[in-house]
Image (cartoon, rainbow, N blue to C red; front, side):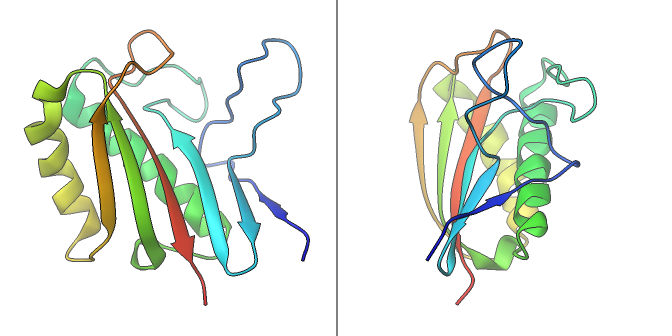
Length: 133
């Protein structure tokens, strides 16, 4: 079964190769699974970090993730696994507050680690896997 590239204009397109087409997909569907690339707190139009505030960054990240999922025919209810990278683990309570509102009662598996997202100003990045079956 071929992989299907998923693209949303409502989420930023990123890549690590400036001036060249990105080798990254926002998401790929393989069979009944959608694998969403790590989403950062970027404005889809400007590709700039939306704010320094962790709550605003968290909302932007999760909304970007949701936009990509929706482009692939999925939603929050289909998420089975998420990975969260926080630049500062002291931001966990604020992130978790926004996350809890965002999932609105849905259950997912999740790992949250302290890490150093590669872009200056980015405090949080999230990827996920959704199941469509």
